[in-house]
Length: 414
Ligand code: SF4
Image (cartoon, rainbow, N blue to C red; front, side, top):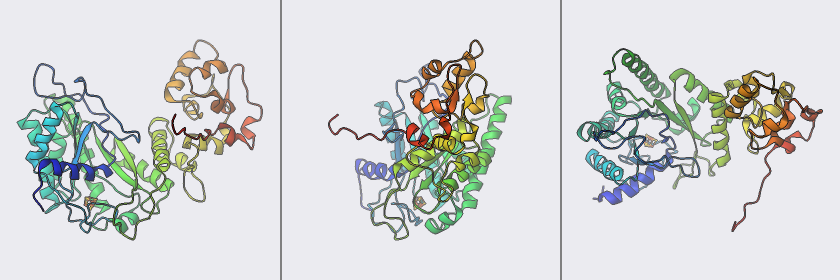
């Protein structure tokens, strides 16, 4: 590997990390630096979360320790057979960069991942050393998200959780067949085994801290994972099912979906085109329905096309579900239970909360609901209010175009 200075390494290793979408720092607990102790804190120090237009968090220093790798995952630009320029940071260099960026208010924390060099254990040791040094040598109280390495010793993964706010390991692909084909050196059993160990450690330390306040924290912002969308033949129904199973079995805080991006000199087993970004967006919406709107995975999957297993791209999955199961509507906003109000297209959790509390005092009219939503046109066919009842509206053949968002041509110089 040619001798590179830190700036050149940063250019290479920050670029190499951009394919990982799971960098959100949501859900972390507060590490305060009030009182002049330590430097940095997740909140309260004037640093805001910033998101790129595609929703990715950009306020972290997001880098790889190295983009060299002994594995050859087909979808990965850093795979062994890839002809990219390689670079490698030392643990000390990552620590210095994090501290200097933090002091300049560029970042609120560190997202550190790595290709595998030498062995999984050696790589994991280097990652842990970065976090250890930041926390112990420099009293760093900013956010740290560490990617753990498949196959690393569970003890090393445990150490990572003691220093990091969040740990994650990527399941990579929604199906075992897809993983075997595109990442043959990875093993779903070992990946899920590491997730199970992390879940146990999170629960154990949470219990211990209820009894002893001095018990150490373990990944207080939980664990997350990422799935690549569109690199294999998995359908949206497969992906929704896999995500639900991961949430249920491992108590994940988040599953991230990353639309596959074609890479230079791609392997011939990969598709030539990236999937529409809207597909990634629809999967995030379906994830939201399961986590906050009490939809079961089977209900979300039933919004997909029965023949293809794919969610529609032109309308959101909640609207797709409502159009498919019209017999459940209209919903009386003055009487329906919370779970049915949550199924009305256009009604969010806040609006449903407001409806539930206001209707204790009076019966709600269409105008009252209109004030709580962005578009009453979308809602009208699906509700009954004090002064409103749709007339055969939910049976209309043209209901879909009536409630689907209008496609607008963006102005070039608007
Ligand atoms: S192990 Fe990670 S870095 Fe290495 S080739 Fe696979 S996905 Fe890329």
